[in-house]
Image 1 (tube, rainbow, N blue to C red):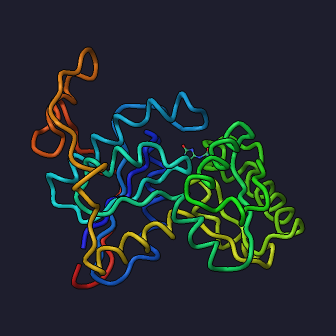
Image 2: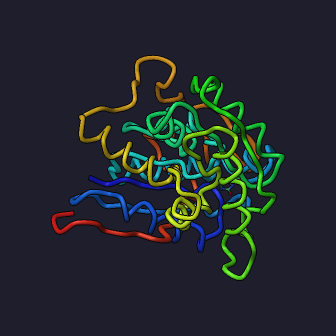
Length: 266
Ligand code: 2AL
């Protein structure tokens, strides 16, 4: 089974860390391929950047379709482009916020979220509403660490994330969902520090995507998520006018940054 984990930002060091976190939980026989687009923002922490990340994300999904990928993970906590990705993909597409919320809901009565900048808390609340988890979310806290500073081992980022996670538990939550893919590599460390379950959406989404494939399930293509038709597209989006599954997107570049094979029979 091949699972493609798409980091929708263009920072390859973050893609590599995401790939490692996904591969660490994938089962025997699963190939985890972490990729990022060749166009788009270096990190996503505003609605503007989220919108501009989506064409590159969709391009990576379309390439995955040509290569026979079984399922995808959208590895950014805003779950950008998730509906559009489901239109392009045949197999399941799982967002990390979506997966993190579902996992946390099974670990206790209520859970909280710790995200990066305060400006991203609105999206986290909106996604909780979309996925039906509002009654379970105690709060969404921001550690005020920008995404790319999470990558810097010399920064105070980890300590700030721990502090906010501790506050979430003190506020009555049973578990914490980490609100950024860039936090994936220190999830276990944070959990140990606060003595409570901490969910990394990248790991949760990888295992959920894998489970859906194992169950023989695919994205429903008979209604809302049907493949979009060919349509004229102007300007820089001209390469997207072909039906993204039937056609090769003009100028598409495959950009595998971290390909990790798990299991002997992968
Ligand atoms: C994220 C994320 O997961 N990746 C990214 O670039 N931005 N999330 C966030 N809350 O800032």
